[in-house]
Image 1: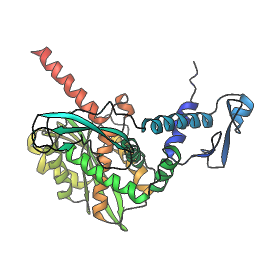
Image 2 (image 1 turned 90 degrees about the vertical axis):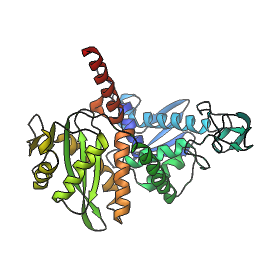
Image 3 (image 1 turned 120 degrees about the vertical axis):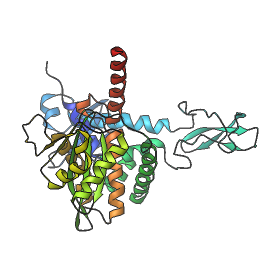
Image 4 (image 1 turned 60 degrees about the vertical axis):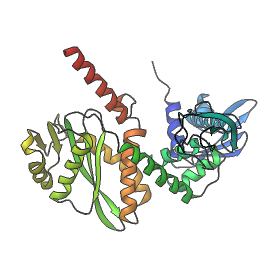
Length: 368
């Protein structure tokens, strides 16, 4: 049976950002994926029609119509959800955030642009407070902020993100505002993620890729788990020497708490020297310079670098090392916790690591 690929292609159009422009309530302009113009999508007599040949000559619902319908559905669901209604998914606190007393009661609601937020009152210290989910006192809704982060790490430029928010969320913000959101919440996520110890397997892959930092080449080192695709460690350095590779391996051990049985790298001499200092005495096997067709190749890390380039090519380089380091942290967090992986059946690497941990525990219980 033939599967209609048009809805999937419509999602690809929508994900690019600024591809769909609203002219009026019943007229939209959708850019061609080939870059050779745009198509008008118009609703007449309750039916959507498009100028493209797929709709005109075949009489089918084309990918351009699907993309407009998808954007309308998402836009309506987000804009209407920001009305003045209490948010049912808001967790209830167990104690006062000031004095940590458990003698708290609900008392009134706070109204803001995001709706009604439950206010709590402490009988012990007499203070009022609300549950802070990380978006307290932010003018825009969590949906808008998280959508901006997601689009950014998918390679969409800041200007296209602001245009996207204006068209589909009815929110007008400056590019610098979106950048501040990214910097703020990357720091928040990093503080949380650094406390976690991922449960990774025993085959690790290491590789490096070049980044342009103020006109100078710097190197982003990545260490990945083979089974879960979890990006264990990432580092940004100004060279590719032995101590740079050694620090990457040591950081991987510190974060994971384990030593791999197999380490796969390319033919860079720094890897061999760093391996001798770090893993040689721990019965780890080093597979260096594997071929593309080998069973133990380094293709998964190379694919990761393709994902990273989607972001860095849009930026055309970094202004300074500090911003580049923050971006490296953001890429690692987005890859591990936000981006579903096709090789993991739609799970994120973090979810896969948790599932792998559960399977191993179950296997140990069965063996016992």
